[in-house]
Amino acid sequence: MEQVSQAHSSTPATRRRRSVRVLGATLLTGLLLGGAVPYVTGNGGTYLSYLVLDERTDAQGAEHAADQARALGGKVVQDYPQIGAVLAYAGPQFAEELRGRPGIAAVGATRTIPVPSPPRPLAGSGFTTDTGVRTGPDAGTGAGAGAGAGAGAAGVAAAPPAADDVAEGADDSTATVPDPGEQTDWNLAMIGALDRPAGRNAALLRPPVADRGADPSADRAGGLPTAQQLSRVTVAVLDSGVDDTHPDLRAAVDPAASASCADGRPDPRSGAWRPDDAINESGHGTHVAGIVGAARDGHGVTGVAPGVRIAAVRLLGPLGQYYAENIVCGMLWAADHGARAINDSYFADPWKYNCPEDADQAALAAAVGRAVAYAQHKGAVVVASAGNDGQDLNSGRTDRRSPNDRTSGPPEERQLGTECIRLPGELPGVVTVTAVERNGLPAAYSNYGRGKVSIAAPGGDPDGGTRGAVVSDWPGGRYAALAGTSMSAAHVTGAVAVVAAQHPDWGPEQITAALARAADDSCTRSLPLGCRDRDYYGAGILTLPTG
Image (tube, rainbow, N blue to C red; front, top):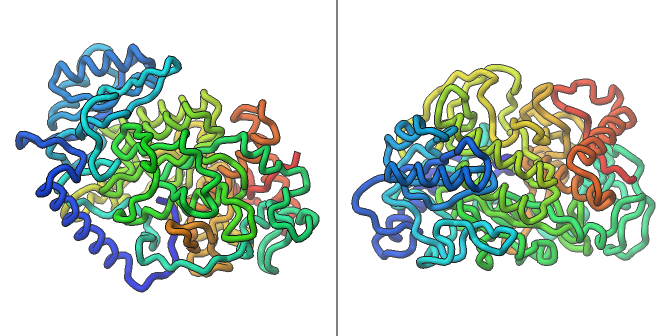
């Protein structure tokens, strides 16, 4: 995840240790009681999960990849006919043996710690084709997934979730704030989304829209779309889950377009997309969704695009990981459900950077790349956070976090070049977002890099409280002030929805070009020297186009 949380009563290290202890105990209890963890009873063997990519990127390719995987004893649990790939579970030598088979383009283990068995069959999982037929191998068979919709290493306590190198890790100790009554929205004033100016210290990148009177639900003026127009636009939030019972989000989340992909299989059962509060940082997705589209009703917070429809797609599984199969599943689901923007405020686990010289990591990059390209072809703008490491993405770097699903011992220390990339933020065509504070200056934690980042948006100051961080929704009807490039990406996703509502016939390229033009213009008019450092700003600072 890509947020920097506020200070807490416990330290990040303490929270991580507590999370691992609680998770290990929970999973062990599930094994003893039976049925509480979504894995069938194994025969003592161990499995890794693999993405298998065929040379063909269609349904025939997926069928061939599945046949080849089964021929070597792999257990195929999900196919991805949209991109010619499958998810299979097998032993540790599976990838090496399968890579030499004709027609197979790539095979990669998506995790480094084995599990006792593949996930059990899940009734109703799979992608629905145009004819209404589900495509998953387990579609319509077997029992449900038990007490949870996600998948993890049953009985194995893994490392903490993939936080960035700055202090973050929002969990049950996250300090929530009182209902802000839509008054802590300097971030919206910065991008021109308000009818009123924010506090004196917020950079106003265009004159505030004229006051519309006392009615807080009145549509915004100045050429911005109405809530009714925005209701025709769907955006997807791929994250830790979204609490659609939150007052700000009840009307925004579309159940028909929402699902869990927490084990690589789309699970559309009611509520599967909601966060699991037993998992560390599970409130992150609700915070992001609030920035995108919280209702404008005088209570709580307002989103950049109030009225937009949100497809809530949970990626985070019980071990707090965003594995590549979860991302592939979520991206395809969102694209097939009409998302005009797909928000990705995370990086792919277990490798913070995926290097092409490693066959497993190269396969993961290829699989996520195919899913991103599919979504873009279907008309979605894919938006991603740049990351909170304060790193130049155009320089070599040290990775001391990978693999982050290990169960013991320190991670490897890898010296990496620029060929190693973050997923999905450094894939072709992805709008990668850096963070600025309320003064319009780059946030110290934000990654950057000329040609690597696309645009800057409000991310806030992690030490700035409600006046300097970004206040948004938190599960249970609460609110929290967080900062990070997660928050920045969410602003851009909301802005994509605004432009899509203004121009329903525009494709991704036209939408992103309009945002780039407005961002460049805002820098020229609002900052003394403009956004001269394009290493940090990309096209400039996000401002909502009004026409």
